Length: 370
Ligand SMILES: *Cc1c(COP(=O)(O)O)cnc(C)c1O
Image (cartoon, rainbow, N blue to C red; front, side):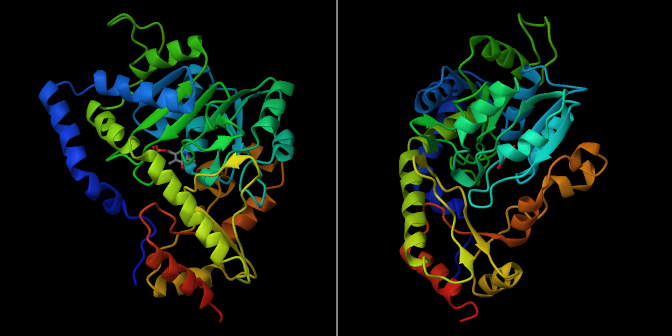
């Protein structure tokens, strides 16, 4: 049996009629930039996340860039982020003219290690970007203590964790800014690019809303330089349809993860992902750690058996060519990150994965080296 790593058609095709109706509604209005669909989507997400301001934007990447710009981060500043993340986290820091400084992460949760972040500080450090990786929250008590002690701004990169919880608070809602992505492979996957920026702060929201549209206010007057970071009306309308099913998608991911944990608990040579007490994990990825240098062999074995799998992430940020010139790469050990890059492997956990498919994944894992 072939089991893909992700199957967007299995999610979108059953709701094709709803999606077409949403498209028709926007076509009818003739209003394609911002407008009512964007505003309603923002209101729904603000309520879901428990935040005062939710600002629809063009992508998860642009949400991070806009957050940094709204905080006035730029040339001469340093921003700390984990090395074990998707490129956008670090790329946006560099694009503002600031310098990314990479810290290590915890081997069991894959999330940022604040002891390592401490070693990355300098008198230029202005902000930190914790990443809620693979669907599970960072320890946000540790983050708040760290940020307060060193007077840093915090942007939560929540691209993979929309609706994941730290205690009773939503990821992305606990800092100056939270950023989200609706790239099709994210838990709330759009039919194209899209993103969201949230904040509880009225003043920051005001700046970000202006910067989303070239810093323009009123029309053709610019007190600040922004960009075109707008969310399309069509994308917002389609995302509203997807969002109406979001609780089901999340529950199904959680059921799939629980089934793997039960069925794979005695599997040798593989460490299962760790769920922390009091955190609600939403499983954007189900990521194994493969022991004894067997990761690439296991990946090949699964692929031969028709099981989709992928390495997130094979090349950490401190190993990227575009950052090789940075003097700031040497401040802390990145040993855990390097280990993870060589031993992680993500397997299918998407909501529509059925039991037969999951059993095929489990059988393929169990037949490795058996
Ligand atoms: C996907 C992702 C982004 C970027 O989101 P886009 O919508 O693709 O621009 C940023 N950070 C992380 C951790 C991501 O996984």
